[in-house]
Length: 240
Image (tube, rainbow, N blue to C red):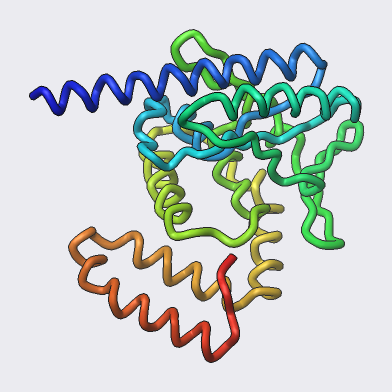
């Protein structure tokens, strides 16, 4: 009982600290008139109205997307916000993700991969406020948060695990969305698969493996590691 109480107290402390940092970061960007959205694992957890402590030791940074703002204002806001984040014992840095991959041009929204840009319906990137405790957090629709993975780089095993869990809970949550709005993301994903077929293959294997029960994963783990080592040696592939 004593140990369980200590765990609960620590989780409450982690959550309180991270929420305080989030609030201060949002305030700093607002002060400099910089339009910013919170994304990544923290946003996905809050989108499902789950406590931040459910991420355990997974959180190390706060992912943000900067939509608009003057260059000098963005730079100063980043300096001040990063200082706040680094002072938190449970966080390391502020990460401006998807730079130059999401583009707003007047009333148009585009997503980019290499020299290819695809139009996206404006409502996909509408500001969606996540509410947790007394905090109002600017972000995107929970389904948009999921589709943003197509714009990212290579993913680690723990990233796959978190996204699989999120997808399952999102489906079970009853949240409604128009899947046709997200077709550009699907098209972009197919383009990436053509360029990186081995990454696509490995991603598929990971998806299947991480969907299995924990006991089955433990049984297969030695074979997965061996197969991965052989694959890297024969094709010269290295994971970032």
